View 1: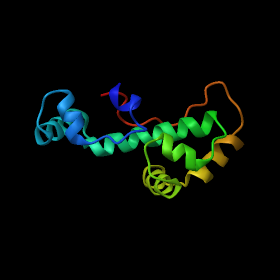
View 2 (view 1 turned 45 degrees about the vertical axis):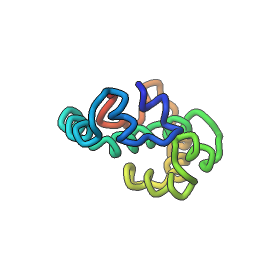
View 3 (view 1 turned 120 degrees about the vertical axis):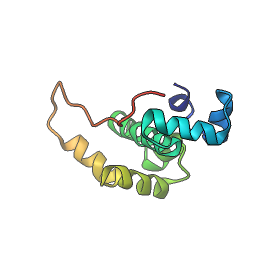
View 4 (view 1 turned 30 degrees about the vertical axis):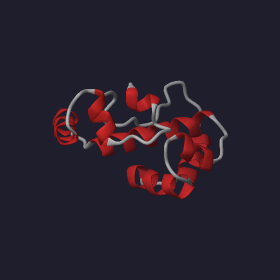
Length: 115
């Protein structure tokens, strides 16, 4: 999906709308109708999901994870992450690594899986 492939970049509604030949306003309304989320909310959910995946699978510092997810810095990651999960990235990562290992272990994924 385009959004997932470009999370490390700036994703503007104008650019997403242009990809499918719609005006930004029409794109935003149609997107919300079809997904239940505003485009910006969807992108932020995908960025949080990517941050979780990177925290589960790498030892990258949170500052690098923030940049890889298209966020300006670690503080920005922390604000967005807390808003969507209720926890800071560092605390979430610690809890994830401290959980007992199990074959079926899965983190909560965002409400919308694809665009």
